[in-house]
Amino acid sequence: MIHGRIDKIAGPLVVATGMTEARMFDVVFVSDFRLIGEIIELKGNKASIQVYEETGGLKPGDPVYQTGHPLSVQLGPGLLTSIYDGIQRPLDKVREQAGDWITRGINIPGLDHEKPWSFTPDLQVGAEVHGGEAIGSVPETELIKHLIMVPPGISGKVTWVAPAGEYNIDTVVAKVLTESGKTAELNMYQEWPVRKSRPVATKLAPDEPLVTGQRAIDTFFPVGKGGTACVPGPFGSGKTVIQHQLAKWADTEIVIYVGCGERGNEMTDVLQEFPELKDPKSGKALILKTVLVANTSNMPVAAREASVYTGITIAEYFRDMGYSVALMADSTSRWAEAMREMSGRLEEMPGEEGYPAYLGTRIAEFYERAGKVHCLGGDRVGELTVVGAVSPAGGDLSDPVVQSTLRVVKVFWSLQAELAYMRHFPAIGWLDSYSLYTKNLKEFYDKTMGTDWVLSVKKAMALLQDESNLLEIARLVGAESLSPEDQLILFTSRSLREDYLHQNAFHPVDTYASSRKQQLMLTTILHTYDEMTRAINAEVHPRVLFDFPLSEDIAKMRYMHEDDIEQVLELQKKITTAVNEKIQLEND
Image 1 (cartoon, rainbow, N blue to C red):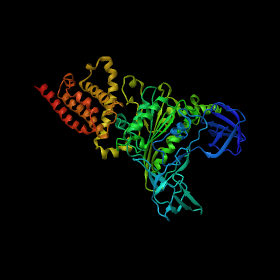
Image 2: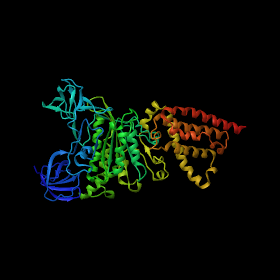
Image 3: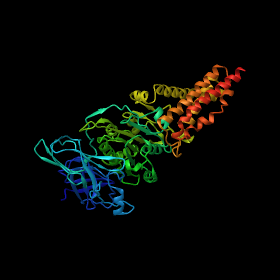
Image 4: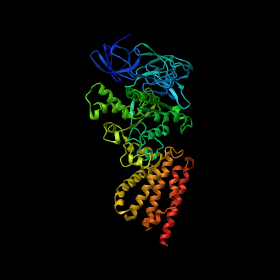
């Protein structure tokens, strides 16, 4: 049945008349091409529709068909290992139907409704259930057990449960007599509107770090599990590589990677690498715990705006099962640009740099969907960590997208072009970046890494800050004119930068450093500093002291395998012995 007619077309924006029964954010099909669109503005009987596909060939008078439902995603077994576009169309199925290029009007469900899954019930007839409780489970992959949950808003008494067996996701696996006296038939998947956050019992403060294996992040600027982080930086500073590293190595059970408006070759690298990567914990393929949402820069601009919501809704679903989930959004600047384009076509009053006035609100709503939570329907605790890359023009941190993001996130990893030009990667500026989770995580660090760890980190950061002040003086008068103590600060800070903060993402060993390896590496560098301070107090000349035979061994720590890293303790003893020898020579 036709519900409206096209009145105006402006790129991806279509205005339709006769839409008297339309509601905001409802999905519609535009023209007989059946292009997918979403209502984003209503004025009288006119509806403004953002179309997620190419609108070439449409003309005024073409029909518009309403569905009566908001833009939603299907949530159930089959999400993991999938590669979707911005509106949850599986790209492998699209390719089978349309070839290498996505043609218009393709509408494929996000989940395979024919594939059988091995269902094991967890409930008995007569049990009282509420939204979020597990009906049963299926082994979705070798790494993840997928809980089949009661949808939020449904509660009552179980009147029937399917026996263990093989079923597709459309099969009814439980029946619940609700409080209203109606029987709800529950199958193995849910549909959920992407713009609506999924409910939780309570939110908790993050109190455990997300271990990423990246030394600059884990040591100096950690993000808590269930926290938020922002990675702004200019072109070529390594934003995408950092996102890839976090997706590969972060200490999480589920990874959702959203490529929002990124270049096609970068997404191709992700799609080619992930099936070959191994999960460091299990040794299994990393793709077994991953969902990829690919919306490249040559895809329709409106779909960029939807892709971010698609990704975070899938992430919330796995969080509700009690898993630790990490969402990588690369990049939210492309998402904001899509909002700006649609806002301009709607002729809304522009805000700063042409972005819509509600930019800050949309960004805040997105990041606020992160968190550590008590899940509905049980004692499960789930964590959703969100890391968003921002690509301001020319690396300008006063960009509205950066500033709106910094108001809501608690970790700021500032990527600097100067460090990237010096080939120092990750190019995270240690003087500009910050983490507001340090106090929350102190108790965790004291228990797992000892009470000295937080003090060691503060000491290393103080050395790096002192170095930045001393470098200005050294450029004027020369490093040898500084006091021995200041020369030692420069010597140690260079070791911190080159041997610790610098990390090669493409080296098979250096790409990842466990918490134990990071602890031993940092304490060895600081141990060297303390021993050399002792030597300087014994009046050993800096020039003699810095001609240190073990400097090369310190530099090689980053390339030591995890199994061999305890050998660093022997290196610390050798450093003490070497310094003692220099003190002895000086006294003689």
